Amino acid sequence: MPKSTRYVAKTPDARGFIAYDAAEDAVWRDLVARQLPAVRAHMARPYLDGLERLGLPRDRVPQCPEVSAALEPLTGWRVEPVPALIPFGRFFAMLAARVFPAASFIRSREDFDYIEEPDIFHELFGHAPLLTDPRFAAFSQAIGETGLRAAPEDYAWLIRLYWFSIEFGLTEEGGRIRALGSGLASSVAELAWAVGAGQGAPAPRRRPFDVIDMLRTPYRIDIPQPLYFVIGDLDALFAAARRDLLADIREARRLGLHPPLFPARDGSGRAA
Image (tube, rainbow, N blue to C red; front, side):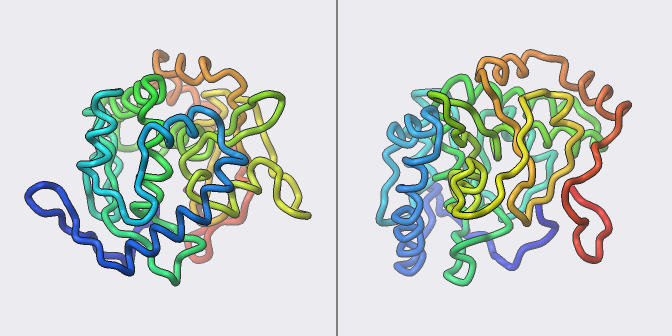
């Protein structure tokens, strides 16, 4: 997650609604129009089924209370507007309480194709569909509950499991690689790259789903991922919610991080 943002959070009214203007609604409309063909071609069935269940508007930014009204009868989850950036501790606490934090701003035209920090399009179009599925909802809650028991120095280790599954996971359907992760659902360029549908581009590396391997794998948030994990059997992901993830983190620490497959950020010398 980026350390800072130039975006300013929008404040909801007493009912939880936000006054998005016509230009912001138009950005949402154009993002959905651009992304729908890509997700229909490359996203996995759990995401597509969830997107249909939600019935998100296409012509305006959805309101969190509207999305919550669709989610709560299905899985008991709701979405709540938050500032652009929140600390890991608050993120885990919200997941544990079955509340998904939704950054309240929408990207500008300048950042239409790519935005480093999560915006409302990423949160609602990307994340909310999987939260309609009780299995994915339970997995996200388990990540949050583990985070509440974790020490702050363990946060970066735990979030890698979430990153390589809920954010950027792949799966197999009908003999094809399909995208599962929310970060892919909200990114046209990376979605095609991840599933190997990019025109003339080399394919990214892929590894089979393995909790310890994921915990040990560094990532960067500002580039297409050079490596994705393929969750061949989704039941294996859901079973991970019943593991002793703190023990897994201790084992991952003992083994150490894998060498990164990307250069460090300029000026920092380190990756996430």
